[in-house]
Length: 160
Image 1 (cartoon, one colour):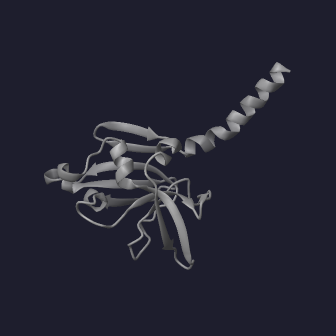
Image 2 (cartoon, one colour; image 1 turned 90 degrees about the vertical axis):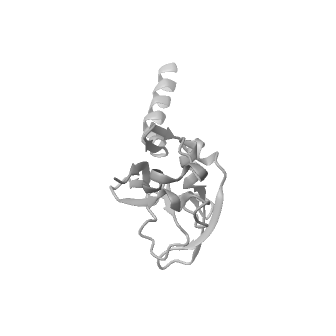
Image 3 (cartoon, one colour; image 1 turned 120 degrees about the vertical axis):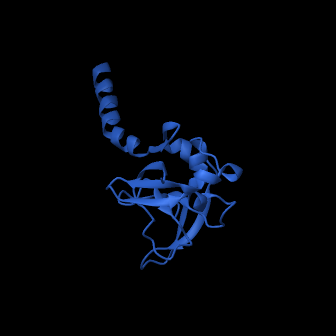
């Protein structure tokens, strides 16, 4: 009986392993690399927005600001975002290799009122496999080219 129980636990772990790993988000900066879990991300203050995609009607999204994610990883904003740091960008990478750049001042309320979010819920449910587990959402942008799906990595890059 113990062997059967152990075998069942092992099968459950192996089948859930990739799904659990996919819930992680890697953040890379000068200070090194950090991996945030879904629990880490969901523990940050939530933001809810309503936005329309291409041909769909309004959809409710919930997530956290990219600024709060980066601050959790030790990246500072506010008064420290000046001089050479103003040329730093956030490179967002997706599972399929799609990449976009967002300038760090675009994420700081001291520079803009625009919100850039990492969302994980759509109409109160986790994002689907083709969209999630995480997605960038920039509600005020006219084109959705930077609304990256299946976000895996956030990298701070300094433009030289």
